[in-house]
Image (cartoon, rainbow, N blue to C red; front, top):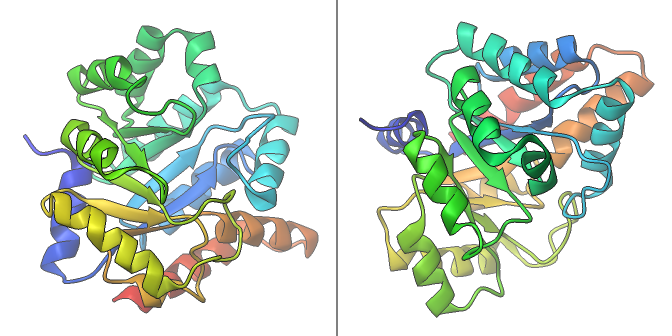
Length: 266
């Protein structure tokens, strides 16, 4: 049986377009609004990433850090994140949802307990930014047994030999980090160069779903739309921050932003 992530990519290929993958932080700016945002943007996004906030998010730029701090300040806990996922999946059972974050939270919870809660709430995949290959092989196998996708990461400095091993071990989606930077940074390399690097990886196994993340906004997304999927996160977190400063509704603002992003890759 194919995973929901795999089916989402299949649908996008049939429509001859990239998958739009959104990232927001669980509990930003409130637990209730976090759920409302997911429900709203799921009308336009193909796959949703939900970050579990961390007080020292080393891979994240200022916008995502600000979202994380807001969520933590509001008292978000791991059990609340699973509740948000469960409520979302009840209304959107076929929509793929990926949890993204750092291994510390999994370690504290216990790997088996964490995966049990993932399965019970309806999580489709995991991205653990500080658990690289090959150290992640054992945990990735545990994920596979639970029918949860473990998403491997590839960066511009990954050697070809290592790339081949990662791709061979990967599940239904691979995440290509477009540049050596934290999330939300301005593109330090041209979209043309990113796609050149992307295509080199893609040629190793064209059947694998390979997405691009880091530095993607409404200004750059259309130039990268030949990829299997594109991840937009920092721009969404910034939109929440801006709407709160202006005392606007973040749910409405994000719905409009994701709608516009989708239109740029159709």
